[in-house]
Length: 465
Image 1 (cartoon, rainbow, N blue to C red):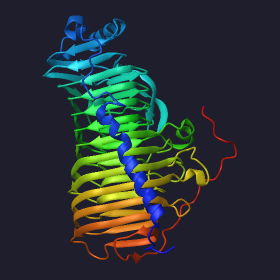
Image 2 (image 1 turned 45 degrees about the vertical axis):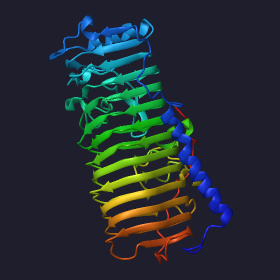
Image 3 (image 1 turned 90 degrees about the horizontal axis):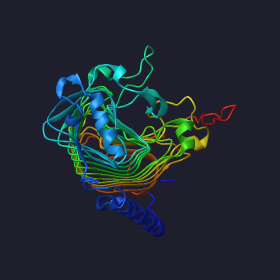
Image 4 (image 1 turned 60 degrees about the horizontal axis):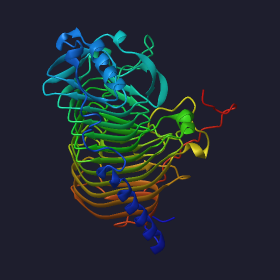
């Protein structure tokens, strides 16, 4: 294959049609087809005030029992609003129930208790695996029609955060974590936490996260992790994170591959992102359930420790990352670059990886248009891609700004690179190995990257256990 082969007209039309459909399909999210976009009014006649159930809100008295009693009462009465008036409510983990809205009034602050004994232990996901761990400060399991509405602040306690250790192998509490829930709405509040994830919906359908101010600026402090969820809208959120600001994932290894629960139909719009420890938007590396149909539009990266956008997986994950569309996106103050794509070597290998060629994830239909960068060290790096499963369908168009180094691609089919008007770079703008498609100019050919070793099949096939 040559580096400058043009797509045939039928192939080109097919790819553009696919890209257009990819961008349009999730648009129904904004109209509420998949996810509720208005503030929930489940039972307007029922409003229960946590103060009436014994909550003190002085920042010293432990209010867990009073808060949970109010939520449970609203649930058994058919649903409604649980009002949290101004005050500082010290609490351990509380569980949100179906048809209940936790509604903070101005000046309300929920404070996480500093003792792990105040958080229940259950099955939770950690780095793509289901393990025993502490439930979140606000958590829900198998609940429907739930909401957390601000203004107000939810503040985790650093004393219970961090990573599991040999001494305590239980995963630490997230700040907000809903598992296997349907119709979830989060809007208008702020969060503060360190050394652990802030918002982690898992196996959920129909989510809206709007106008959130998320601050988690130390290591291991992801902002929003969307984990094997469907029909998601993240709108107008301001996130400063010590790790990924927004991460899309779907589990790791044979466990997640056999569960086959992708993250899909996600729309991220109008967000401002600051990544102090890793990427601003990470897609992967835990992708064994698949990730597809993602639209990212009208977002801004103010600064980032690594890449503004990092699309990543590895051999042994299996499944796919497909139909990713990024449009009208601007990024500045990047320490490593704007975009990195790694199909073969990102993330931790699982103890039970997906074997053979099936274990190489499929990457296809990735589109970037109307991108503006300022002083990117690297504009695009996409070389960690398997020759056996090349990235099929990659568009990078209408890109402007300044960068120190251009684009490097390997093992890509049906590429479209055009209208790239960046300045300030040293060396060639484009370097390629085994790339076909419509390229903007003649590329410098580079040696073929080293190919990954496939995972050998185990003697005993894996089964869920």
